[in-house]
Image 1 (cartoon, rainbow, N blue to C red):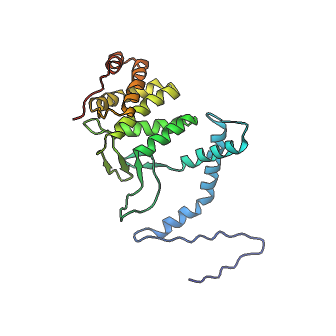
Image 2 (cartoon, one colour):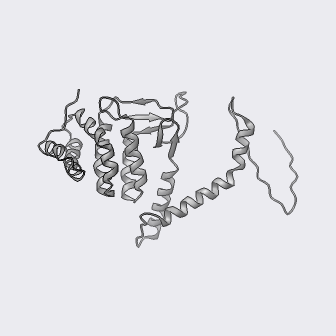
Length: 235
């Protein structure tokens, strides 16, 4: 395609090349392109808030500080609000093996991201991941291994349940937010009922941390049970 667009010498022009899949309204897509300046402004404002609100890290290494601030900002760009599913931190964007809904939240990556966010002072990300996992727990107590933005999910593996419980303990340790953890506690108990007894070091470490967590939120019976080595049994 060839196009000639006259532009005044003192003026400016924005050129947008938009590729549209079948079934997408061109007018609607072009209107969204026209809102690009507002989006840029909103993103800049979000970056400014991140630098001034919450935990601000300053070290003798200015380059480290700059890279950490950039990493925190980029992390927030992977937060997706999926209607009917919730807000999640996705593993990326693209199309794989012909799947239309391949934008996925993977629990292993998501929990690691949440733990890093807690250490950086971004407590809201840790809370979002925690409550998202609990909300999508199945009836047997298992946490999904992955979830797509269209609501598909898989509950095959046992590790995500262990990671969920680890995140519960670490979230309380970092934030002191007993209210959120108490709100999750019924789900924590269901996860413990389906405790995947792998005997691995991760499971044992999580049990040890959960003893303190249970005590902090007033669940003394659970704390005693965990302290005696009882976690639950896998079906």
